Length: 411
Image (cartoon, rainbow, N blue to C red; front, side, top):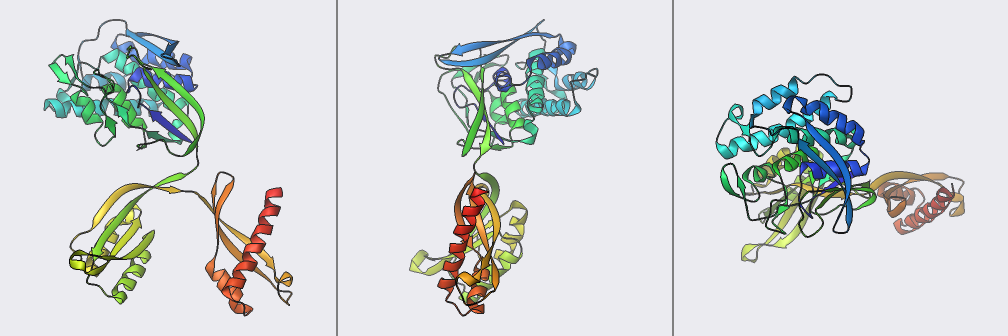
């Protein structure tokens, strides 16, 4: 399964995330018990949920109010209070640690913005009790729904725009801390002059997501949860979380390229074999025309990240190239793959009682086979053993594969 957190419409906040989790099936009674317990050292909160129709979309709104106004609190003081929480049957260690990670993300960003060390950081806009409720509520829901066992993907965040007033005066939107938290995460300004992405919501988002994509991946959506914010934006103020099954597995790979115009065929052939032997997933060498109309080659290698450094070093050593391009962490879509062995009775085709086995590489999306390729070495052996053309050996194998799949489908 795969989980998609989608803040493209109206940004992200802690209570919007929490509302989405509850709409997806997280148990609010358990969540409220956890929230009441963890916020007690911070003055406590009152919380309730309700269904709100936000410009045509029904969503869960989680209204969390502090029982008393929180003063600013240092990061160290906040963590000490969390560490000293009394035991609670619902509050597991993994929830506590991941929640602390969220606050650490906020504190690190605040320390960079204000030029202070972590032990000097104070939370101002991040009110203690309500922020603790949002963070622990979301993290508890994440584990309750077992999203820790799924791949969680985040889509681009709508940030809003303009300026807002803070304790430090007027600041731009997104707030400096929010912007730092979301470094390397795709975001976009607008669609209105208001703050749409909060530091707390952004930190929870970054902590819970495994990957960030520009678009929703190819998947079958099974369920959707909508969480609602408190502002009237003039359009649906909602965040949604989707859960479904992916049609494609996504694998992170590095793509390594260089252009050469001084190597002969023997060196290129040797390099090809050496790159494969040290762990390259794929190697292609493409003829091209380079500067001054000189013929050359583009060497492209697909590699898992842990092999990239060895591959780059090998290319430098073997080619003497002066520059290598590396596109790291490119997503490679992988369909479900399987090797099927087909037993072939050759009496149907040849004057023999022999049987042989031909392997096929199968590619499937869901239950649908979209490609099958016979194993070349098996076809070659069949052709050589019975003095057939390679074409004829392939026709026999393809025919038997079709018959095999008919029987398999019926079973």
